[in-house]
Amino acid sequence: MVTPLISENELDEKGLKNLLEHLISGGVHGVFILGTTGEGTNLSYNLRKQFIRKTCAIVNRRIPVMVGITDTSFTGSVEIADVSKEAGADALVISAPYYLPITQNEFVVYLENLVPHLKLPFLLYNMPGCTKLDMSLDTVKKAKQLGAIGIKDSSGDLAKLYSFIEEFKDSPEFSVISGTELFIPETITFAGHGAIAGGANLFPKLFVDWYEATKANNVEQVAILRDKVLQIEKKIYNVNSDPSRYIKSIKCALSVMGICNDYVALPFRKFNEQERKQIEQNLKEIEFTYPEQGVKI
Image (tube, rainbow, N blue to C red; front, top):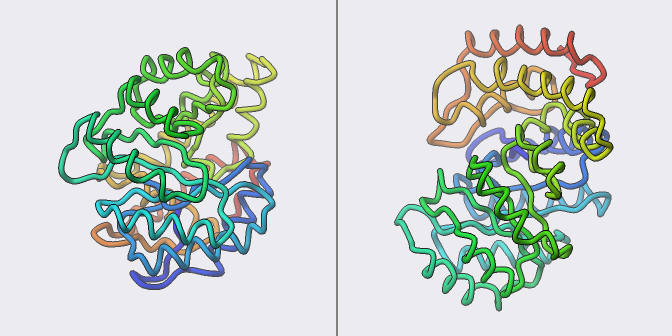
């Protein structure tokens, strides 16, 4: 989930409520806040804490809330984990500390030190593009022994995702979740458990329907919905070529839809007026192809 903002120090509280109700009414099975799309590592601790508390209060136990606690600071991660527990979150999500590269063994040692401080269940988050660590299967197995209840794999490597699914297929208590939304059919078909899809900020029902169609082995419907997801990829995510375009495009589209503000935290900047007009036009085309999502231009 994105983090609706008005400024570097202020949440868009009205937008936050709008977005959560949009997601819940769209049928999502849970929300993950303060992840990559949520700009978690760009936000101050005070803003993160406020966001966690307000999200949990608005959701009010209707669906699970997972909170990203990834940080360069060990004590900072523990601090955010404690607030998540107090606020009523359901689980934590942990990636490798970023900036300086670390080894697989160093990450395991990090978890060995961190886990005793955690008061909630935790999932791993494999995000090598941002952390410089691509979690190995052995590392994930060791994390499971330490108590991990699953992994979100955002490596973009389908073979790696399959290796995780194969390894833990006889461990129903351990979930393998794709962080690459285009892999939803492959994940579910080959006994994975779900996906965390940034595009669901915009069209939650589309992604829930895609998941359900795959579960039901409705091959024709899976293909139809896949084409619609590819339209989002083409018409929303690729309006410009910035590395941060995924976050900015989703926030811009949500703003055009009247759901929340399009402010993005520094060092990123929101789309300019020309890019916003392109998003507006492209959304109208997507609305035409999938009107039941309730997009309002």
